[in-house]
Amino acid sequence: MNLDRSWRSELRKLLLLLLGSVLVGWVLGFPLASLAVGFGLVSLFWLLQIWRMRRWLEHPDQLPPESSGLWGVIYSTIYRLQRENREARLRLQSTVDYLQESFASMRDGVVILTHRGAIEWSNTAAHRLLQLEYPRDRGQLILNLVRLPEFHDYFLARDFHEPLQVRMKGGRVRHLQMEITPFADGDFLLFVRDITRLQETEQMRRDFVGNVSHELRTPLTVFKGYLDTMLDNRDRIDERFHRPLLQMDLQIRRMESLLHDLLWLSRIESERSQKKTVKVDMVSLLEELQEELSQSHPQRSVALEIACRDAVYGDYQELHSAVSNLVLNAIKYSPDDTVVTVRWANDGDSVTLSVSDRGVGIQEAHIPRLTERFYRVDESRSSQTGGTGLGLAIVKHVAASHGAALDIQSQPGKGSTFSLSFSAF
Ligand code: ADP
Image (cartoon, rainbow, N blue to C red):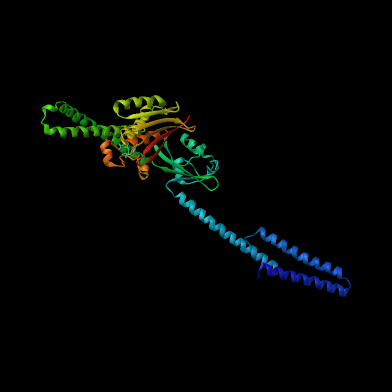
């Protein structure tokens, strides 16, 4: 029986009872007193049922009291809801357990943080990687337990677009990658991955490239020395060999600049190199570069637009190489009769160096890959211009180590603008 029907039948029974008591009272000559007794009996019955229900609700795991009619239906409805509720809770709990178990067995550290940074839960890998222990550290602020200045800044800045890489000292040096993802109502999921082996392999690759480039320099210097002597004494050499000698000279120059760029890239990439962070006067750097270019490329005009005099904190040589790579590219990939413009301006939040040309431009599809080593849009053109394919890789690296953003805007056939934006002080 459902609640509506039993409610109606209960009302009917109540009405009949009251009518019966009025009738009996009327026969006996006390209709009102009899009605009052009827009411009293009904109230007593209802009070008894409420008391039974209260007693049952105190021990909800027991079976509901036996009852018929409306009260029976109420008991069974509550009992059913309780059972459904318990089952839903168990299902939810088993989903949570399942998720926690899968997180717990992960090789990466997982930490659930509240919006304040208090630890809600962490897995065993987080214990190994960050020495966090669950449940001991529950409720503690992560910044009090993971005392790394880089992580502190990363967490407080609340900009989690890029993962953070940190170097953990103490015993064996370890490299960790930390990534935070906001979820639910402002809580955070912190993933920690041990990337030590990856970093070691990367370091081995850099060392290898650096060493090979270094080793190749000596034989190349010997070749170049002999070749220069032969070219200086060209008139004493058979004319048939002049062309091959000039070709060799060209290729040796290319190889020299390739080795120069490779060595420079491996030097600036090397973590061991002690970076000199000084105040670099960008205006004098640009003026010096303009002067150098007027000698090396007298046929080209490089216009300087100095809209601010802000300095940048960083490494003078690295900044010089990044800017000169951008300007040399602008010169290489634009016609001789066009102007290359270098602009230095402050737009409030950042100070931006932009190099614009009116040259060949770049198709949009190539732009994301330009900073890869040896990536070239047009292989034949690049070999004509004598590029090494490492220029923009150097620019990207210098930008990253100076906290600058590299932006590339280009229109095929119209020209390109490469910008480096540094944060303003
Ligand atoms: P490269 O030594 O070949 O110039 P870079 O790393 O400096 O190597 O540049 C990579 C590629 O990006 C170049 O081969 C060229 O295709 C393209 N590129 C770079 N700068 C410009 C520019 N200002 N205009 C058009 N294309 C450019």
